[in-house]
Length: 164
Image (tube, rainbow, N blue to C red; front, side, top):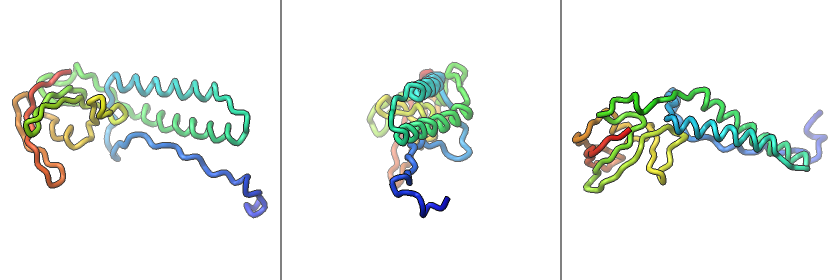
C-alpha cells in the first residue's frame, strides 16, 4: 500500500538505539575477565527486561521491544568479537592490557587500569586500551620515562608501578 493512504499517526518514527562504546575499525575487542562478566550480566538483564516487559499499548510495546532487541544485537556482536585477556598471563614487568599503572605526569601522581572499551570508566580509574595515553604507555616498564603528546601539549610521564 502506498504511504499516501496511511494515517499520519500510523507512521511511526524508528526508535533510536544508543551505540556502544567506540571500537576503532579493525581493532581487536580485548576484554578483561571482569569486562566479559559485565557484558554477560548486561545481556542477562536485557533478556530479563524483554521477557518482563509490561506495556499494554501495542505501539509502545513494539517500540520498547525494538530498542531492547537492538541493544541485544549490538551487545551480542560485541560478545562475539570479545577476546579475553587474562592479566596474569601478561608480562608482569611491563605495561600491557589489564595493567593497573601508577605514574607521574608533570609532577602529579596518578593511576588507572587499562581495560576494554566497554569496561572503561574514568570515574573508576579505568581507561580503554585504545586511548592515546594507554597506547603510549604500553610496553614501558617501571622507571621508564617518556614524552606523551596530546595535541599541541607534551607531558612527561614516568612509570612508578605496574600491578596485575
